[in-house]
Image 1: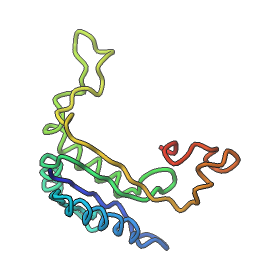
Image 2: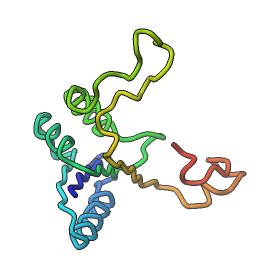
Image 3: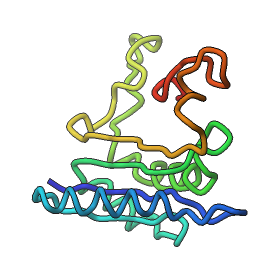
Image 4: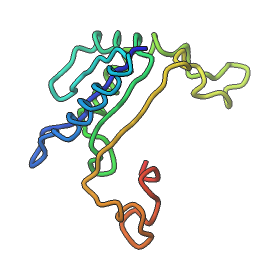
Length: 147
């Protein structure tokens, strides 16, 4: 099994992106110890779109690791997704899944990647209580409720 780890840590302002890279290092070590082949991209260091497309196609598991900035991923992660997934679309999808005889149904079911597994892991500069306390910022939604 081949795992692609995408490190979306970004050097910006007071952030050095080191925490996300450390988490990618730990994940790589653990996965390699279990016999997985790990390939990585540190998005902030730059990338070649076609090379990334091939990594996506060849990977069984894709892990996105990035910080939560302003309730979203850093712009470089969004740019990577836009550029790479758009270029990879013909390899990863047949269509958007809808059919001419029923265009209202089936959207999102046309992928060729049903056997791939995905994981999104994010870091936040917030204490756990910010997520779990009903009176705090995230109104008790918990970590998984932020998405």
